[in-house]
Structures are given as C-alpha cells and as structure tokens.
Length: 164
Image (tube, rainbow, N blue to C red):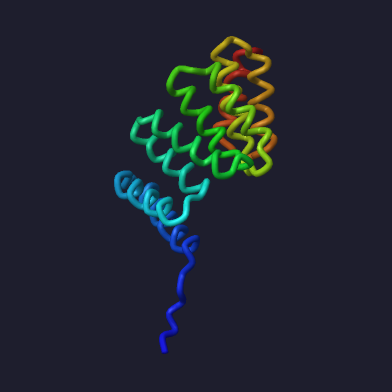
C-alpha cells in the first residue's frame, strides 16, 4: 500500500506557484512564467495571476502585466495587490491620472497587507503633478504604516527637504 499523499489541485497549483516565485526572484523570468501558467492551469488563484503580471512587468510588458492583474481581480476583488500593481504599471506607462483610481482601489481593498505601497505610488503621482504637500502626506502615511520602508523615507525626506 502506497503512503504517497494525493495532492489536491490547489496544493499542486501552490507548488508551481512557489517554484515560479523562486525562479522569478533568481531572474529566470521565462521559466517563472511557465510555472505561473502551470499553476493557473491547475487551479487559478489571484496570487498566481498577480505574480505572473509582476513577472511580465520585469520584462517590460506592462499591457500583459495589467491584463494578469485584472484576471486576479476577477478571481478575488478583495485582494489589494493587483490594484496597486496596475497603478504602478500605469505610472510606468506614463498614465498617472489613470493610476490614481487603481491605487485608491488598492487602499479600499479588504485584503491588502501592504497599503504603504499604494500610498507611496499616489505620492509619486502627486509629486510629479506639483502637488507637493499632498504628496508629502502620502509619503508620511507610507512611512507610518511601514517604518522600515526605506523608499518611503527617501521620498519623504527628499520632498520635505525641498519644501524647507
């Protein structure tokens, strides 16, 4: 009698998701994409679509990145990460006004562990528009939510220094 545990589709999907993430962190983007897609084929999750989008962004394909984030939102509209990521990708595409809407949706999401990212991104857009005091408040919010977030500290300190 075999003692091998039979994996559920979700468990198998997570196995590919974890492998894909490891490959992505090593810069092996094409292999990561294949594994994210295997994960999604077995059991689509919001995380797999979000991270697949993130991988596409590393390759400079913001349109595919945004599409994957929208797929993630379709699975779980309460997950904040894909909203923030769409906002970040739109900023990279030079569409800051469209980005704000998505970043605000990230902040309203029920399941979002990193709202400091959305605050930082909103601050970046506001700073670029010359709305410095509003930007400073967003950077302050990011810093307060995550005191060790170096990028938030840098943006806050730089802008505060310019305003003094």
